[in-house]
Image 1 (spheres, helix red, strand yellow):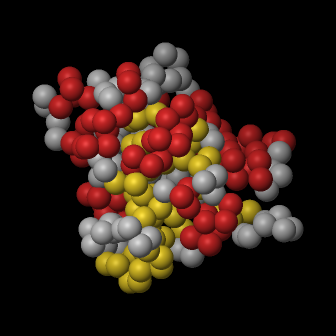
Image 2: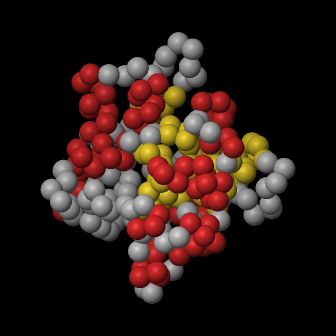
Image 3: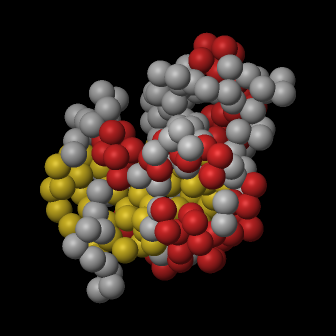
Length: 230
């Protein structure tokens, strides 16, 4: 897949964060779970547990001089789903460690709306970022991976999970997959290693959303269009 194909087919990205998270994301960047643990000084056995085991609930993080942060739960994951579909000897702990090392973006509005209305999340509001794909790819192409599946869920069809499940942009088999898949099912996630410290430079709009209802436009770039929303 070329960068031009990626941007043409998926001009916008979306990220769902906890309610009220925009000021911290704006000021400190978008961090993966591993990056948050780095920033908040979590080490030793506690870090190992949070990185390599399924989180049944959200975990608050506190450190003087930093805003409060939360490690999101991993309720859509099941060890049994990972054990049914392993590749190259990957164990559940390996997959969790891989997930926790990356920041995640959806390439389809349908996908983010589906997550917002999922049973685990529809009872509380969330912050949703809409981002410019071309901008983030230009800035972070060396650390970007593309995934053909929802790597944070095994509730339905888990699919094969291995170290090569995601691929770099030039290595993603977009054309071959397009023969049998519509765009929303072709490239499912865009992943950035560790963190996106300059994420504010790529955000077009920020909304507070409950289920699939937009409650409030929190922030909007002057260049954003009417369609730049969840």
